[in-house]
Length: 152
Image (cartoon, rainbow, N blue to C red; front, side, top):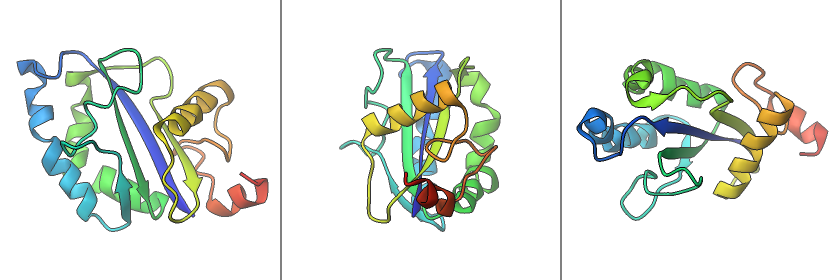
């Protein structure tokens, strides 16, 4: 099994505003870093190479990021032990704090790529039910064996 993740963020500014330019200008390098990271499998992107134009929610200021990794550790290594962490630290400059969970993790069969609709379903489920083997956060970190046992 591989680990899928969806995270969303609500921008404080239009994506072409000068206040968010530094974030936008670094999308390509950070996405490239992700793709070169150990354990990276796949990421959601459109023809331009990123996902900022993919409208998964009715609010145009909500952007999505979705990817698949070999393991939780591989995702954590990218998020917290690369240049990506510098942008996480500055998230408040560019994005609103959401009142509900803004990311979800779940296990997918090797070779499987979930749809954005499935990812949103998982996030919605997490928000309604908390961490379960079906949809979880780093706090619970259900392993793939638990998901198999649960038949998910």
